[in-house]
Image (cartoon, rainbow, N blue to C red):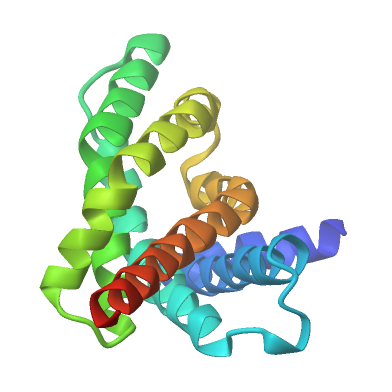
Length: 188
């Protein structure tokens, strides 16, 4: 196990963005598979396109953006450990998290082939409860995570993200079911 961690650490040192993109893609996929198989019990009706969309989001969009974000937070000119930690967590959760969740619902809707109006409708139904759940999980976690060495923060987030990604996948799919019911009601 220490050999694997050493190889991962070495790879992150050489290629931090790529390493974070790969680990994020794998862990976002894991969260979606858990959502579809363990929670939604889809079995052979697994939605592989849904998994692919969340992998594109997690590895291709989320990871590079968060990598830059964490490096930016690290540059805050606060020298005292706890004030710096609380300032970083405050910025992360009250400025960045709403931006990321908006990006998530928008990107997922557009990747489903829908338009910005549908993305707005999904945001209207899902954003507030998802943000509240985000704060319940990530404010306490980020207080601890901001004390972790910078190169491991996204990995730590991604470990917590496995159940969180399952939740996001379900929230996104739930919005899809609401849209289907509304479409059927309009046709009736």
